[in-house]
Length: 317
Ligand code: ASP
Image (cartoon, rainbow, N blue to C red):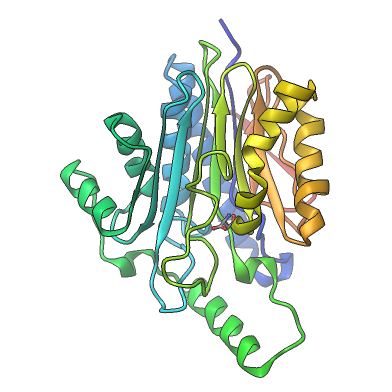
């Protein structure tokens, strides 16, 4: 039996410490711990890595602290268009959805697309309609809105209008959530869900629903979920690049993930991060921004989360 493992990220656009109350920081850490426990519980009962990453991402989608589901970024037209994907490392089956507007948990819809076996990616109105047919919970678009995203879009628009030289912070701009897991049978899976970039063009699709760019999983190699400016992750086929480095160049997970974040993606001067898990060993979560929401459960069963440099032990899983 393989050792079970799970890791998550909540986006590399973490706020600066002083921009949020201690209670809000504590709540965001708690939601990450809840998300890890949801996935871990499934893995401990012998469930699949695919079910575990979905369960973890659902908790993060429902939390207002992360840019996915409730709390997602706003388009320049002031509504939400959500992207998500999920991949099974055992079979390379994948499901993805983009510009979804009414499905409460886009990762569940991505999973339904995967399970359908008919297509890999569905978009827009048809994707929401498919969700409805699958009996998934539907919500009005405003259900995803939080004051934090309204404020972020307002500042971004103000900066644009005044030609401000003060660059927008990573937190104002973006975020995403994702999870990677390995189950007791040694299978890997990855899932990613996002509202994309604040103030994004309507119809814009980032890397999160693109298999190989924002999400990738292959048994015996790695599972990866990315966060950062999607356009560059797509052009660099970032998640798959980690797998390719490991598979064809024999790099270790650490070295491959480090190179993709700090060399390949950083060379474009963008915020970038990811969580990844190798066929064996602990998750890695490199990022080049001020902070990245992230967490994992150690092989000793201890739960750890972090937003900036310091790690917060949260007790036994
Ligand atoms: N990758 C996401 C996108 O481009 C944003 C993020 O992860 O911060 O849509």
